[in-house]
Amino acid sequence: MGEDRRVTDPDVVVVGSGPNGLAAAVTAARAGLSVLVVEAADRPGGAARTEATTLPGFRHDLGAAVHPMAVASPFFRRFGLGDRVTLRTPELSWAHPFEDGTAALAWRDLGRTAAGLGPDGPAYARLLGPSVAHARAIARFTLGPVLRVPPDPLVAVRFGLAALDQGGPLWQRRWRGRDAPALLTGAMAHTVRPMPTLPPAAAGLALAVQGHAGGWPVPVGGTQAIVDALVADLVAHGGRIETGRAVEDLAELPPARAVVLDTSVPAVLRLAGARLPGAVRAWLRTFRFGAGIGKVDYALDGPVPWRDQATRTTATVHLGGTRAEIAAAERAVAAGRVPDRPYVLVAQPSVLDPSRAPAGKHVLWTYTHLPNGSTLDPTELITAEIERVAPGFRDLVLASTASSARDIGAWDRNLAGGDLAAGAVTLRQLLARPLPTADPWHLADGLYLCSAAAAPGPGVHGQGGYLAARSLLQREFGVRTPPSLAP
Image (cartoon, rainbow, N blue to C red; front, side, top):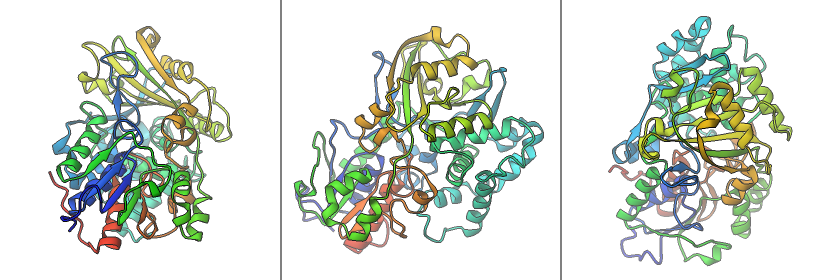
């Protein structure tokens, strides 16, 4: 199928080359179709790239740095990511240090984690245990379309009840201490949403489940290694990528049976508005962006001097204090204010991958939450928060590079105003991302959306692209059985 067609006259055109766009392209190429990927930037990958943004020899991830959902993703399992990219997974999935020098610790071993949470340990194990025991089923559920019957209904129901427990006004009822709720709230805050609400609870629990199952790994060489593996597979199966080619109108593309957009929703309306059914166009116009992030990359003269020794061994650290303090910070951001005590997400990949920095040196990746479109330089805000729990951090900084929320939106148009999720993770946009259908990737005849603005949402998991490709293979080419993606 597609063998007689030239790549210059492709079966499928993908606009955008983030992980989802590449996943869609790989899946289509593996099905025997001719595929062309068109990318506006000079390199493929979207935000999933790794570059020396501070000093020579210090390689920083532009977007995500740690990848729990990549190892959990059904697409990447089929793709054999672990056979193509070296992933290093710490025993400590994430740490949540406090100013008193202690830290709440989420080990891959759920029992070990519970044992360190004092009187809340049994409640933590009861909340997460059933889902951790079925971590792959949880990944299939949370990384699939919401408006379909889940493949493992009982597992999904149990997970849903846990999310309701931690996503409602009684979210503190099971906890007696500080550490367990802070540990979970740090994971929930990845959604950049006010809490307690259901979407952050569901996303945070999904991340926690994978943290106690496959772990939270970093790829050796940075996130770029994942993109490079996808590109290599695509090219090996006849696909082609054209970089430096911005698309302003679908009419600029060569004729193709299917077009897949790895773009924002506003870009869909701009590029394809005339092709969309009226109801689809009207629904997409209601799609909203959420709060933004401000990011700082640091080149360090040595490892971060966390007071808590275990925190020095993990790739991921959450800062922001107690559950109540993080929730207050997220409410402030949602209201358009910069919090005095912000939530900060920290990744220290060179703890596990020394190749990311010169000998004895380290890279540090950080972001904090800011109002959408904020022009604030977040350097001092983030530096002060790290210094609270790692005194002497400032003295280690050799160089840093900051991006405001507005900068991030200008650099990657999918992330308008710095919204890392490419669209607010609200309940409405969780159930209908971007459309309230069982096939939310299908926009019109021959037209599909696969970015983080489509189900299952943000993260380096490739599922949006894979599921969009599955849809187009069936609808446009009559292919019901997915192709093998194995190496």
